[in-house]
Amino acid sequence: MGTALISNGADPLWNVLIRFLITLLVLFIVIRLIYYRYSKKQGNVFTYFLMGIMIFLVCILLKSVEIQLGVALGLFAIFAILRFRSRNIPLRDLTYLFTVLGISVINAMAAFYNPLRGTVLINGVIILSLIILEYFFHRKKKNPLSKHQLIYDKLELLNPDKKQDLINDISLRTGIKIEKTRIRKIDLNKGNAELDIFYKDKNKSHD
Image (cartoon, rainbow, N blue to C red; front, side, top):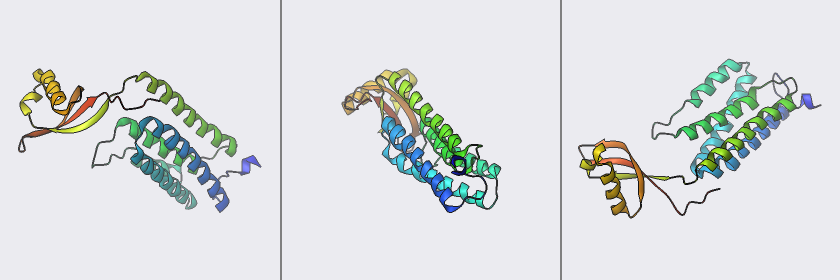
Protein backbone atom coordinates (compact mmCIF):
# COMPACT_ATOMS: atom_id res chain seq x y z
CA MET A 1 0.00 0.00 0.00
CA GLY A 2 2.79 2.41 0.97
CA THR A 3 4.73 1.66 -2.20
CA ALA A 4 1.71 2.61 -4.26
CA LEU A 5 1.27 5.96 -2.60
CA ILE A 6 3.73 7.74 -4.89
CA SER A 7 4.18 5.66 -8.00
CA ASN A 8 6.39 5.95 -11.05
CA GLY A 9 5.34 6.72 -14.60
CA ALA A 10 2.31 8.74 -15.52
CA ASP A 11 0.73 10.00 -12.30
CA PRO A 12 -3.04 9.79 -11.87
CA LEU A 13 -4.68 12.90 -10.46
CA TRP A 14 -4.76 11.67 -6.87
CA ASN A 15 -1.07 10.78 -7.05
CA VAL A 16 -0.17 14.27 -8.29
CA LEU A 17 -2.27 15.82 -5.53
CA ILE A 18 -0.47 13.77 -2.86
CA ARG A 19 2.90 14.82 -4.25
CA PHE A 20 1.73 18.43 -4.38
CA LEU A 21 0.48 18.40 -0.78
CA ILE A 22 3.76 16.89 0.42
CA THR A 23 5.67 19.57 -1.49
CA LEU A 24 3.53 22.35 0.00
CA LEU A 25 4.08 20.98 3.51
CA VAL A 26 7.84 20.77 3.07
CA LEU A 27 7.98 24.24 1.47
CA PHE A 28 5.99 25.66 4.38
CA ILE A 29 8.42 24.18 6.89
CA VAL A 30 11.51 25.31 4.97
CA ILE A 31 10.32 28.79 3.95
CA ARG A 32 7.97 29.95 6.69
CA LEU A 33 9.19 28.08 9.75
CA ILE A 34 12.95 28.07 9.06
CA TYR A 35 13.93 30.73 6.50
CA TYR A 36 11.56 33.46 7.67
CA ARG A 37 12.32 32.86 11.34
CA TYR A 38 16.00 33.64 10.85
CA SER A 39 15.89 36.15 7.99
CA LYS A 40 12.64 38.10 8.63
CA LYS A 41 12.47 38.79 4.86
CA GLN A 42 8.74 38.58 4.28
CA GLY A 43 8.97 39.57 0.60
CA ASN A 44 11.04 36.50 -0.27
CA VAL A 45 8.47 34.15 1.30
CA PHE A 46 5.98 34.85 -1.49
CA THR A 47 8.68 34.49 -4.18
CA TYR A 48 10.00 31.19 -2.85
CA PHE A 49 6.54 29.67 -2.45
CA LEU A 50 5.44 30.63 -5.95
CA MET A 51 8.69 29.49 -7.59
CA GLY A 52 8.54 26.18 -5.73
CA ILE A 53 4.96 25.58 -6.80
CA MET A 54 5.62 26.52 -10.42
CA ILE A 55 8.71 24.33 -10.71
CA PHE A 56 6.77 21.40 -9.24
CA LEU A 57 3.93 21.84 -11.74
CA VAL A 58 6.32 22.26 -14.68
CA CYS A 59 8.20 19.10 -13.70
CA ILE A 60 4.94 17.16 -13.40
CA LEU A 61 3.96 18.38 -16.87
CA LEU A 62 7.35 17.39 -18.30
CA LYS A 63 6.95 13.98 -16.72
CA SER A 64 3.47 13.55 -18.21
CA VAL A 65 4.75 14.17 -21.73
CA GLU A 66 7.67 11.79 -21.17
CA ILE A 67 10.41 14.41 -21.08
CA GLN A 68 12.69 12.82 -18.57
CA LEU A 69 14.83 13.90 -15.65
CA GLY A 70 17.64 15.43 -17.75
CA VAL A 71 15.36 18.15 -19.09
CA ALA A 72 13.92 18.80 -15.63
CA LEU A 73 17.40 19.13 -14.16
CA GLY A 74 18.33 21.52 -16.97
CA LEU A 75 15.33 23.67 -16.12
CA PHE A 76 16.20 23.38 -12.45
CA ALA A 77 19.78 24.54 -13.12
CA ILE A 78 18.59 27.58 -15.07
CA PHE A 79 16.37 28.75 -12.23
CA ALA A 80 18.95 27.83 -9.58
CA ILE A 81 21.52 30.26 -11.03
CA LEU A 82 18.94 32.95 -11.68
CA ARG A 83 19.92 36.41 -10.45
CA PHE A 84 17.25 39.09 -10.73
CA ARG A 85 18.88 41.90 -12.70
CA SER A 86 17.13 44.63 -10.75
CA ARG A 87 19.11 43.88 -7.58
CA ASN A 88 21.78 41.61 -6.15
CA ILE A 89 20.61 38.58 -4.20
CA PRO A 90 22.61 37.62 -1.09
CA LEU A 91 24.29 34.23 -1.27
CA ARG A 92 22.20 32.95 1.63
CA ASP A 93 18.96 33.80 -0.19
CA LEU A 94 20.26 32.13 -3.35
CA THR A 95 21.02 29.02 -1.30
CA TYR A 96 17.43 28.91 -0.08
CA LEU A 97 16.21 29.46 -3.64
CA PHE A 98 18.31 26.48 -4.73
CA THR A 99 16.87 24.44 -1.84
CA VAL A 100 13.26 25.35 -2.71
CA LEU A 101 13.74 24.43 -6.35
CA GLY A 102 15.48 21.19 -5.36
CA ILE A 103 12.59 20.18 -3.12
CA SER A 104 10.09 20.81 -5.92
CA VAL A 105 12.10 18.81 -8.49
CA ILE A 106 12.72 15.90 -6.10
CA ASN A 107 9.08 15.60 -5.05
CA ALA A 108 7.84 15.88 -8.64
CA MET A 109 10.34 13.61 -10.39
CA ALA A 110 11.95 11.20 -7.91
CA ALA A 111 11.18 7.49 -8.24
CA PHE A 112 12.10 5.54 -5.10
CA TYR A 113 11.91 1.77 -4.59
CA ASN A 114 9.74 2.52 -1.56
CA PRO A 115 8.19 5.86 -2.61
CA LEU A 116 6.62 6.85 0.71
CA ARG A 117 9.67 6.02 2.79
CA GLY A 118 12.05 7.56 0.26
CA THR A 119 10.09 10.81 0.02
CA VAL A 120 9.87 11.18 3.80
CA LEU A 121 13.57 10.36 4.21
CA ILE A 122 14.87 12.80 1.57
CA ASN A 123 12.64 15.68 2.67
CA GLY A 124 13.39 14.93 6.30
CA VAL A 125 17.14 15.11 5.63
CA ILE A 126 16.72 18.51 3.93
CA ILE A 127 14.62 19.92 6.77
CA LEU A 128 16.87 18.52 9.51
CA SER A 129 20.00 19.85 7.78
CA LEU A 130 18.53 23.35 7.55
CA ILE A 131 17.46 23.33 11.20
CA ILE A 132 20.90 22.21 12.39
CA LEU A 133 22.81 24.66 10.17
CA GLU A 134 20.59 27.62 11.02
CA TYR A 135 20.70 26.86 14.74
CA PHE A 136 24.47 26.65 15.02
CA PHE A 137 25.45 29.34 12.53
CA HIS A 138 22.77 31.75 13.71
CA ARG A 139 23.90 31.28 17.30
CA LYS A 140 27.43 32.28 16.35
CA LYS A 141 26.14 35.68 15.23
CA LYS A 142 25.75 37.15 18.70
CA ASN A 143 25.61 40.74 17.47
CA PRO A 144 24.62 40.72 13.80
CA LEU A 145 24.88 44.03 12.02
CA SER A 146 21.93 45.64 10.31
CA LYS A 147 22.49 47.04 6.82
CA HIS A 148 21.08 50.11 5.15
CA GLN A 149 21.74 51.81 1.81
CA LEU A 150 22.76 55.46 1.86
CA ILE A 151 23.43 58.16 -0.76
CA TYR A 152 26.57 60.01 0.35
CA ASP A 153 27.90 63.29 -1.03
CA LYS A 154 31.44 63.70 0.35
CA LEU A 155 33.44 61.78 -2.22
CA GLU A 156 36.75 62.95 -0.76
CA LEU A 157 36.15 60.77 2.30
CA LEU A 158 35.85 57.61 0.18
CA ASN A 159 39.62 57.36 0.04
CA PRO A 160 40.73 54.18 1.87
CA ASP A 161 43.07 56.30 4.00
CA LYS A 162 40.07 58.25 5.32
CA LYS A 163 37.94 55.25 6.23
CA GLN A 164 37.58 56.23 9.87
CA ASP A 165 36.76 59.84 8.94
CA LEU A 166 34.02 58.50 6.67
CA ILE A 167 32.55 56.36 9.47
CA ASN A 168 32.72 59.26 11.92
CA ASP A 169 31.03 61.65 9.48
CA ILE A 170 28.16 59.26 8.69
CA SER A 171 27.72 58.47 12.39
CA LEU A 172 27.53 62.17 13.21
CA ARG A 173 25.06 62.96 10.43
CA THR A 174 22.76 59.97 11.03
CA GLY A 175 22.99 59.78 14.81
CA ILE A 176 23.78 56.07 14.50
CA LYS A 177 27.07 54.46 15.49
CA ILE A 178 28.31 53.02 12.21
CA GLU A 179 30.51 49.94 12.45
CA LYS A 180 31.63 49.72 8.83
CA THR A 181 30.79 50.87 5.32
CA ARG A 182 30.93 49.43 1.83
CA ILE A 183 30.90 51.31 -1.48
CA ARG A 184 28.28 50.06 -3.92
CA LYS A 185 28.49 52.65 -6.68
CA ILE A 186 30.10 56.05 -7.34
CA ASP A 187 28.41 58.59 -9.62
CA LEU A 188 30.93 61.28 -10.54
CA ASN A 189 28.38 63.19 -12.62
CA LYS A 190 26.05 63.64 -9.65
CA GLY A 191 28.90 63.94 -7.18
CA ASN A 192 27.63 61.25 -4.84
CA ALA A 193 28.04 57.59 -4.01
CA GLU A 194 25.78 54.74 -2.98
CA LEU A 195 27.02 53.10 0.22
CA ASP A 196 26.04 50.20 2.42
CA ILE A 197 26.32 51.16 6.07
CA PHE A 198 26.40 48.56 8.84
CA TYR A 199 25.36 49.21 12.42
CA LYS A 200 24.07 47.40 15.50
CA ASP A 201 20.30 47.61 15.80
CA LYS A 202 19.44 47.42 19.49
CA ASN A 203 15.76 46.93 18.68
CA LYS A 204 16.39 43.79 16.63
CA SER A 205 15.35 40.63 18.42
CA HIS A 206 17.55 37.54 18.24
CA ASP A 207 16.11 34.01 18.34
